[in-house]
Length: 453
Ligand SMILES: NC(=O)c1ccc[n+]([C@@H]2O[C@H](COP(=O)([O-])OP(=O)(O)OC[C@H]3O[C@@H](n4cnc5c(N)ncnc54)[C@H](O)[C@@H]3O)[C@@H](O)[C@H]2O)c1
Ligand SMILES: O=c1ccn([C@@H]2O[C@H](COP(=O)(O)OP(=O)(O)O[C@H]3O[C@H](CO)[C@@H](O)[C@H](O)[C@H]3O)[C@@H](O)[C@H]2O)c(=O)[nH]1
Image (cartoon, rainbow, N blue to C red):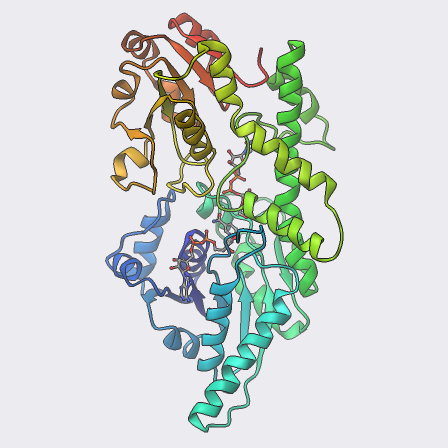
């Protein structure tokens, strides 16, 4: 099938590359010329394991091309994915201006051929009908300008994305479910056909599993599924973090507690890692957007408000632990192991590290950091108040404490005795309960986790 993906960020690029890989003809459109230039040269503008190789292979097979020309993408494709960003506005609601701009442009380029316009971006409930309206407006304006009368024919489908950064390619090939929301069975049938190789598990690592469940819904239910999924996962993390804070006080170990409750199949063991809380480009903005939507309808989201509140406190729990340990932070040197909001990504959007740096700066500490991706990339990522070091050893030099912020696998293999010998005081706060406490203690560290007293 002929597909156009508009927006080549974490979702759009991965979606475009993976759809090409399962045999579709894909045009990826982005209005960022630098990005398009990079991708045309076979380089991925984002760090995502396995993505670059797959991208180049599909470009070489002539199934994937990149352009800034949205008109070309619309004219030459039957399925048009909108995959642009929907960041949070000041008031917590979703900023849909990029979706609006794309929907309007699609309208300007439509002809008589039938198209399915797919909302892949996470958009507020009700956006399906709104996108239809904007596309129609764009088309009518174009017709007025050109004097051409075109009978356009299209449907809007909601197809929310559930991939995780850091395992985006794997998740796309091995989804837990595919959600398709829409009003016209013809559009939903085309979408099902598009995903058939994935549904039948012809790609991916679990060929023996039953077919991927396809959940067909109306537009707004599909939109709500996306928000509800992220809000539930964020709730699960805030819940275990609250339990961790109680564990710290009563002397229990949250890792053991998580194992004990996670084995109950009604609870499940995933997303029960306590630590410095959830961040990233999705959970914070999506939970806020859902709270905002509820407010628009006069409903107060008591649970979700608490989920956010717990998370705000949780992000700074490592600084509190540091204060208990070192007392005065003014004039102390603190080293952060990791900066990105999770491992295997270069994404710094709403990373807990940003709050930790700000708070340490406020308390007068000098902050240094080492991150496997950020240190290598030489890109500032808009970071201020932190000195980026290029090796863990340089990070440890003269530090009064280390804080593990991101659980990069390579941190498990660090030479901790060597790091301890370079520090002023060998204190480590494990913000992800990731390191081996006994090993750290043997290496001469005073070790503190979260809820692992
Ligand atoms: N990042 C994730 O893990 C993830 C997962 C699921 C869903 N989502 C949702 O998917 C959407 C995209 O997220 P992302 O993280 O990929 O965003 P992103 O910021 O990484 O990428 C967005 C891309 O859209 C491009 N763009 C903006 N306006 C454009 C226009 N008018 N024409 C063409 N291109 C345009 C930008 O240049 C950028 O490359 C969001 O709604 C997000 O909530 C993201
Ligand atoms: O047990 C856990 C699991 C995660 N996290 C944190 O939660 C955040 C989000 O992690 P994760 O969900 O793995 O990453 P994302 O790439 O943000 O993916 C989420 O957000 C995406 C965007 O909507 C969705 O598509 C995915 O399904 C959803 O998992 C990160 O800060 C993690 O450190 C924890 O603190 N404890």
